[in-house]
Image 1 (cartoon, one colour):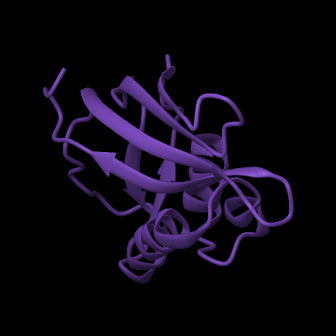
Image 2: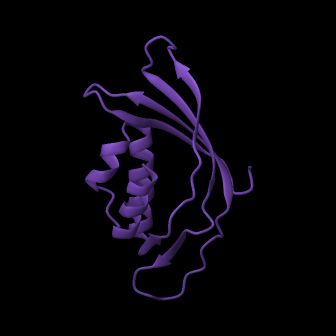
Length: 123
């Protein structure tokens, strides 16, 4: 999902079909809004987030339909820049706590449907 988000940010395309491949519901809405507002400000994204996700919950245990995933993701190699090349001072990235709910969708695919991101320095 994060690679699809990074690709959408780089392209400035909130309607990127890649986002819906990995996210739905509130998570897809959140990611799409972020890409849309970034692009509307004349900005694009670059770089890759360093991830080390771990499943921290499985529900129900016998026949899972939802998994909770936690990570201390590192966004220090990502940045936002002006598409026209003019100067832009991006806030520095860093390590931040992320928790996501991944659910089995009606079409049988697993997608992130909830995301909670904490501030840089939260882990």
